[in-house]
Length: 322
Image (cartoon, rainbow, N blue to C red; front, side, top):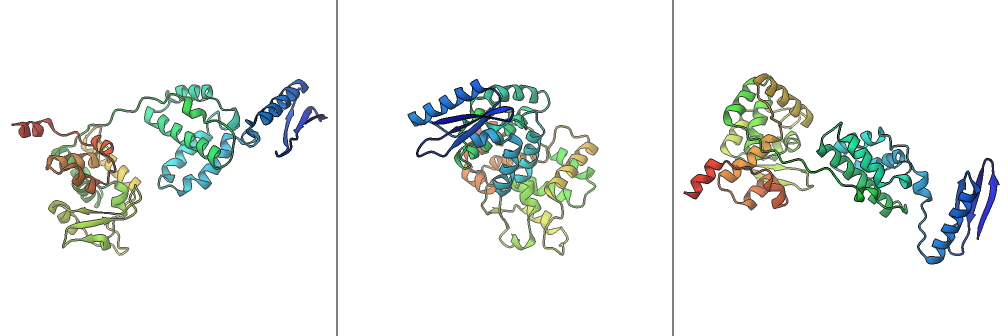
């Protein structure tokens, strides 16, 4: 039975049904209060009622803060997600309740956002918001749909096919003003390591006798042992040992910035640090390693992940064809 009474400038509604918690809501107009009470009672009678009160009382900004503290901080990608969360918190939708967000709101946001950033960024921002709604529904008990699922995502960006020649790599190395960057460039090109894996590398995990390196706590959560080519071994052997046991003192971001500066000084355009991993994987295939062998080196989990890195040189393929 619903109870509707005047409360200040509005109308306060309480719906009580046996076996259900009391449901309350306040409206500025009495007719809205009556309409809402009738709908809630009908849904309870039909067994389809879902309590939306928490979702109606929680803003997107508040949900993002909770998501960051309870979910995102436990991920390896928390550093990247912090910037995405900050972006959402600065959006016009941040002060809207979760229950009020509709796919039309997100479609308008998507179109406006695409005028500011690239499609890949928008896809990442939509993916995080979708996961937030999934957590809100499944773990926080909020009775709302996920509006992101009904919104078309921007088309994925075409995979990069940039190949860096030996001459270009040497130009970048020559333009480097960092003692460590030349060795880092050689190792990334030889081993297909990620910059984060390389920055965490320690001397204790390098076996010069067997020419292997153990990478700990990689992006996919597993350790892996990779082979070292003779060139990779020589590059490592030439490095002086640090007191702290680490091979390199540069952080992943410092590596990226140093590489970009070296490219600018060398006049090399459209080159990114991740292109070195792409180049390394392509070269492994060109050395006639099979898919499983390449995956064991690079750490890729699926063929689809690996395929986007393997833009093999047509001239080399032509030689195989005879």
